[in-house]
Image (cartoon, rainbow, N blue to C red; front, side, top):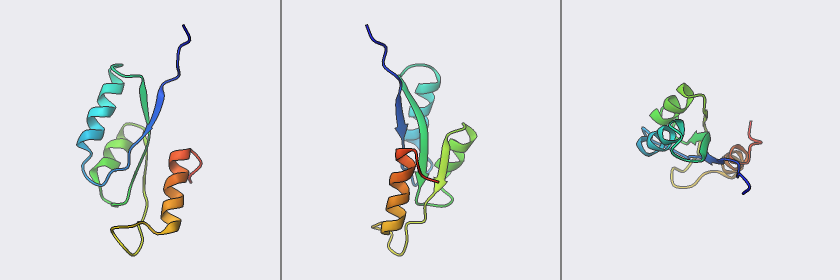
Length: 88
């Protein structure tokens, strides 16, 4: 049987990241075949960013732009780049 590579997981968060914490903890204990690798947020001081950074997960603030209900095209492109693994 062929062994599959772990699923790489990215999470977009804006708060303290309670659900993200549960997911990350399940990975650490080997309960799942997933690995958290990205965690961007459109809230600069979101607790989820600190949590991810403390665990070596790439965490980055992306300024959403003028409107809180829709990202500017540049911010959206940056977000896509982060999840695709090419974002700076």
